[in-house]
Structures are given as structure tokens and as C-alpha cells.
Image (tube, rainbow, N blue to C red; front, side):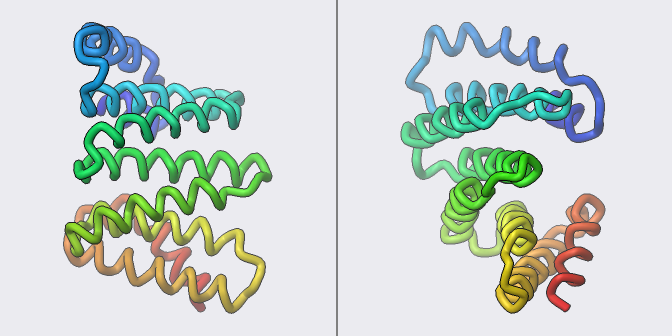
Length: 187
């Protein structure tokens, strides 16, 4: 959690990542088939991949390997919605990496949307899942060429942001600029 916070706020998360990795290692050795342990391991790998991008590196293969690690972890406990949200947030970062590299973010967006919708099926008003779906839909809207489709996608994102903010006002502080972009693209 600390490493993610540090990465999101432009700080160096390497020490926190090393500490998390070291703390998780005994659990991995002892309980390699535990969904929570595997999810944490995938999350740490995902943070390392995102850090590499921030440092001017990163590669698509690493993001794909992390996604595979998340898939394996979720397969161990497919009903755990928290794991789906963690993986979905990684998919958003993966999609942004692909977009920024000039590649198609579509597969990462699609997988993240599947995860968000899966959570929303079980918890229809989940603000975290609504924000995840909104942010992924907004990424999709930004790369759609057809202006009508772009506006439709942006309107869906705007609606989800509004619903998430209504359910949890604290999310607005973090996501206000994305919500404003969705509003702008929706026209």
C-alpha cells in the first residue's frame, strides 16, 4: 500500500517494494497456492513494472507477465472482489502504458472493464468499481476514432464518475480532473 502511494505521488517506492517483497517471500514459500499471497506478489510485480515506466523503461512483456500472475491469483479465489479491483487497477496502468507507447490499449482496457463489471454485478453501487470502470471507459473514449462513439463512451464514464462521487465524496478529490475530461469529451 505504501509503495503504491509513493509511486502515485511521485516518490521513490523502491525501499517499500523491497520491504514488501521480503515480507511476502516466506508466505510465498509456505503458501504458494494462497490467492491472497499470489495477489500481493502480482501487485508488487505490477508496481515494479509501473516504476520502470516512470523511470523511462518498462516493456510490454513485463506487463503481460504481471497480468498473467494476476490471472493465476484470481483463479485461486475467483469470488474475491478485492482481488478483481486490484487487478483492474493494474489493467488501467497497463492500458495507459500501452497508450503512451503508441500501442493499442484495447486488450488491457477490455480486461479491466470485465473485472470492474464483475465486481459491480456483485456490488452494484461499489464506488471503487465505478471509478475503475469510469477511468477505463475514459481511456477507451480517448482512443476511439469515431466522434459519436467517443462521446457515448465519455458520457458513460461521466455517469460512472458521478455515481462514484455520490457514493463516496472523497473520490472526487482524486478523480475530478478525469471526470472533467469525460464531461468535456461527452460534449
